Image 1 (cartoon, rainbow, N blue to C red):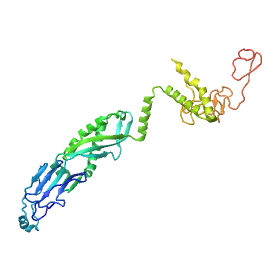
Image 2 (image 1 turned 120 degrees about the horizontal axis):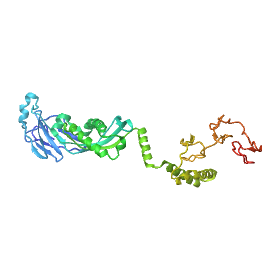
Image 3 (image 1 turned 45 degrees about the vertical axis):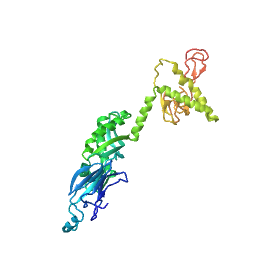
Image 4 (image 1 turned 45 degrees about the horizontal axis):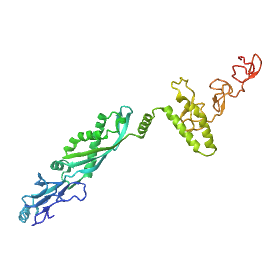
Length: 373
């Protein structure tokens, strides 16, 4: 560009080929002997700042400008002999890119603590994008770029995203009560955070042209709790939901072939009266709480005497029953947990005191004479 030539005047201009340079200096190696009458061309998306004798002048807007320095062609070289043929009247031009730099990313490097009103203390990760542009070229050079010959968006992105994360932590704690309120509030949170960051960017001559939150994610266990709550809010009647699942299992069993499918369908068919009989009752009587066990297939809690699991339709294997009261017994039970009768003792025959006929264990009336035993 002829910055250090002896006779010719300079014609200074710059094009950003990378699309990521915020600032570019000419001469690139440092300062130069920009001559009186040199031409400076500034594009619409640029601003120019001339530093002469170490001080910044006014910013140049779009157009062609004639520069005025103390460097006169040939004469300046002769007069600069005491300084090693280098003029002490140093000058440099900074081209500042005024376009909007988009898709700069910010995010939490480590999870941040958040006190949720319903879930307690949780750790969150947040990510998003932001856009910046230079609004005060001289301030930007003096406070951030300094004397660097090039300054790119990657160099400023790391610092700015840390500023955003710091303000985000405080702002989230003030504005968000619980993560359950988060859906539908991303735009409002992003707008409020952008307004809070305005002063942090302005002191560098920058404007935060836009800020967007793309995700706020809690740990996996908290996400599971949120999913469970969402499922429960959808299911209005758990009893009807269980019956529906059982009916779907019956339909699936009916279409399955082989003896296993037939046996499963038969068992579910026998359960239908019990499952759907209570739908017609408007005010069912209060029943005492029955003993429960866990299904070995799906681990859900089911009645101890259930033959099939109402959740997964798995057949419940009954090892043996009490010979006295008929309740189910575990494989290693020595006594019945319901009546206390020895599990291995033979059934006691009930003898009628009136006609001396034999009756089944637990009989209240004689099956021969009809009298009370």
